Image (cartoon, rainbow, N blue to C red; front, side, top):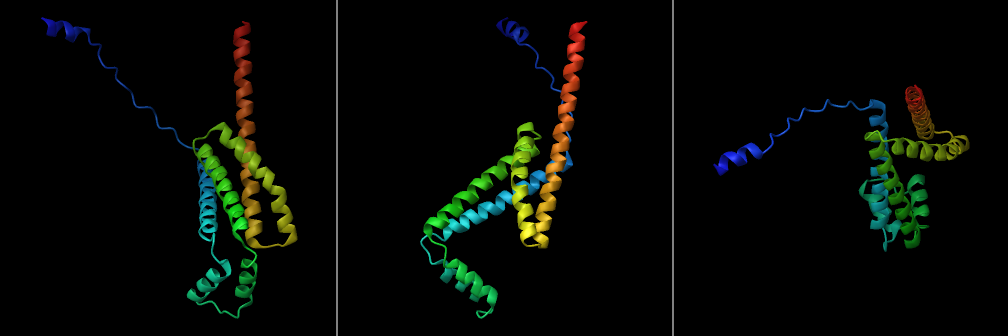
Length: 185
């Protein structure tokens, strides 16, 4: 008898309907992948800077150039070795800090964009537009394909996100107006 009473008191389990799969905006996914790839690059730079602490960077690069069979008399090798002599531990720490900080921003941007969060879109807009003037100056200072390519990609990202955010804002305003009209009746 106790068994039958317990059986009737247990409510039936609700049947969960599977949610329809949400399709991601493919352009946001592409931008997110670009931001995540940038973050990985900056993580590698930060790790490299951290690895080079308390070492003679010039000697390490000379060994690497020899291992990769670069011509030791090359102007490029000599230029890189000269510049490497300027790197000291405090500068390497700063390079690592800035690289890891920028990687953190890139990861945050990429995740926010992939999840299609408004904060991710706004954050990417602000960061992208803040770097565009420097990229323009660098292109004007010295015209190279990588600089032009990076400027073009970042300008396209900025204008696409600006258009997307403006469109969503217009939709939000239209919903608010229709709600206020319904409430007035």
